[in-house]
Length: 306
Image (cartoon, rainbow, N blue to C red; front, side):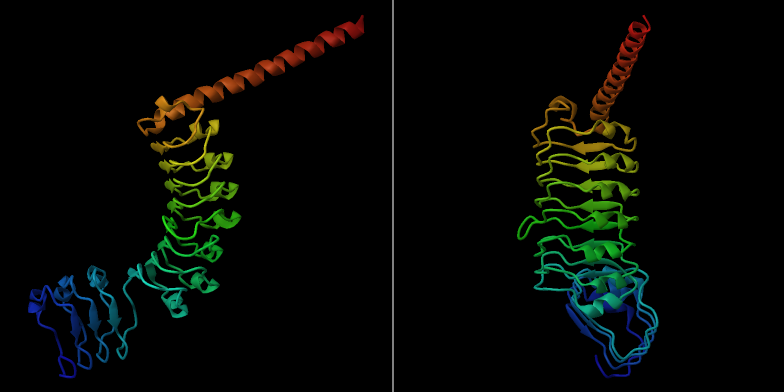
């Protein structure tokens, strides 16, 4: 269909359900019919050399699309929400040109061979979701901490290299809602985690965590914590003050406190009640200790007075 001076595409194009490749380059298309985006099997779409000025948001419906060619048009704006799926390829680094997609919202780079990220990634100023799972990172790619718009970050590693630590610069993710670093070998969570005030979901299962930072009590929007398969022996009592917490997964830890019956159902309430009682008892003990010390001091003064 290329080079035929076509002005519009017929609505009946949606009937080509199994079509995998469509080339309508070098025509006179000024717009695209909504029916085009019903071709869920389409893998290659060549729209180069036309008169298109915008790319419709519906392009995200083309779930099988691997190649989209738009050169030689008059495009002034990309869709408000661009999703780029590059997972399960052989990429070793992030293509620099990709970082000029300032309206990119979702980027999936999982299942590749990426070992590091350059500072160019900070150009993705509107990126909301980033998946870097199952790549070749030997350390946390701190360059992504400059992507302040991120709301979801996935960097779990069921195979390949494992992360052993998280950076102190983690608190730069001020808009982050979900963080998943499961299936790594992280030994501890930095205090900087407490700066992620909007975090609602934390997935840290199957690591080597032995304790949780007290700064976690600052995460008052946190609703879901998965800590399964770590080396935790206890939980900080301050966890009881996290009022939004609804679900906590603790199976597979050598926990001494709280006892297993409090977290069997994965509900946060029984765990919170246990820790709250513990916190109250601890505060009561401190109060009694202070009173006892004051009483001793008074006796000493009395003896000296005699």
